[in-house]
Image (cartoon, rainbow, N blue to C red):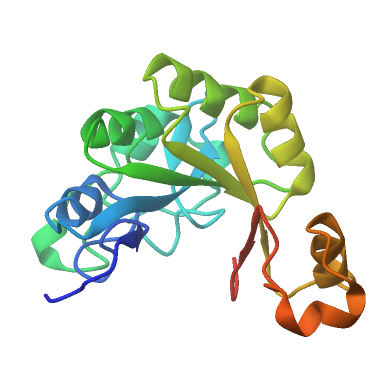
Length: 204
């Protein structure tokens, strides 16, 4: 696979293995151009940060229900691989800590908090605590669609990088960034329209 630029593997190597599983993370690490892995984190019933994109386990496991209604052990017992291919039958739902251990010294992480409106109280402190324990504050970024969650991340650890994910640029974003950089409004066409700390994305 000839790719010249550094890449971020979305949900691991999710085109080659079931998304957000250890198999997808391991596959991503086999490519020298992968410098970042993006993954989605929620909280289990017992407060453990687990790696899962959807609010429910319906789409990617052999069970039905909300992620928040299962313990980390129950999630680990699910088959999160067969939906993708029989080759991955029995692949469990991993914890964030497992991913941190696997990727230590190998790549950086973009950790998206799948929370909004206080859906997972304490998720920010739990994730920051794990990053501290594994000495990953400096080579990780925490992103979310929820600006209040990112504020709580900063309250827990001021030095960690954060990014607000947006579907489209809100009114005034380009003007605000231009003002920060000292670019006159009438020269906005010459300014970079992408805001620091904002991650454009087509969907959640």
